[in-house]
Length: 196
Image 1: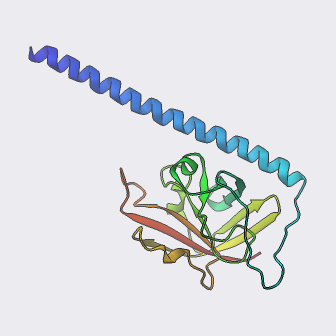
Image 2 (image 1 turned 45 degrees about the vertical axis):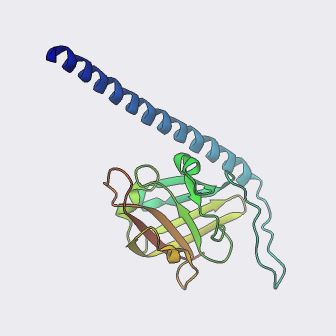
């Protein structure tokens, strides 16, 4: 009886593990496919640049980006890191790329641009980032360049990291610790200032 029970439990564990690996592989495949399609779309859009429309003096800049829109491509050359940035920061967006945090400025706008991604996929290499590392955000309307000023580790409720401040023109957000399994208790923040 014990031997039969062990056989069934062992079989169930093997099948469960295979199912989890299958779902993980499927999600990675979907993300890679979404990134490839988005990069091709960006290349076509960049080949015929769109004019940057700035607001009239005294008017606030408002963007018409909708959830899922492709905003640009974030690159950190020293880390050999490249990821497409979509509008939105929900789980569906972060499964396929980096997400622009809607309450923050858009790339090329004045203000602090907030971008989030998962630590176990697109932002995993941030654990090796250094001050003065170059970050570029390429959009169909142009490219912005940023230099890393600092990193910090905060609790998830510390949303002040996204506010406008001197030297804070781009903020990257991911979960921390990088090697944590499950819901990470903290956030790893990268601040950068615009240099071009």
